[in-house]
Image (tube, rainbow, N blue to C red; front, side, top):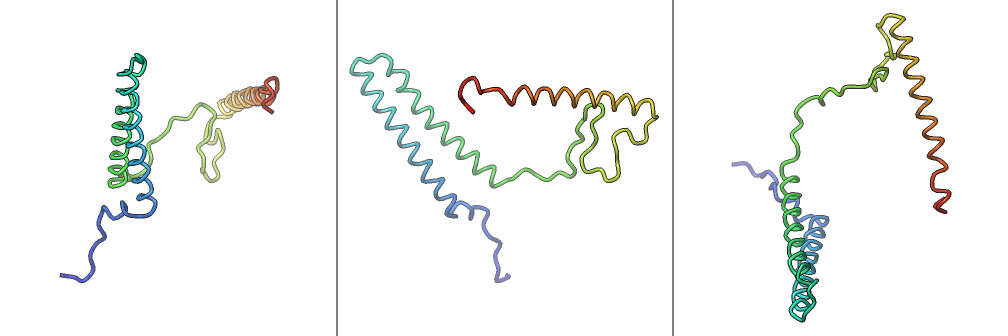
Length: 144
């Protein structure tokens, strides 16, 4: 037997950050259950609308607990790093980011590269026009 032990997988649950989350979840769940009880009392007093809230607040409390448990499970078993990211299909004329020394249209016949350059220029002009139109948006509403 060795003198050093591997840290427990559950040890992260007692860090200050996680203790704060635990307290927040407990307070929220108790608050939602109290609100459900309050709505039940109002419903019994004759407020018909409160019957819906009587069942809604406990449902929210259950949802909070399920989300909390799922978050803990996700923290225990993070996504496996299964190698390189999947290949993403890029639109015509878009270059791969990070390609050292690569240019859009490299290794293609000149006619095909020119056609892609024209498409890319037209697309960039379209994006510039949209950006110009959006910059003034909201001024009529007093937002800027």
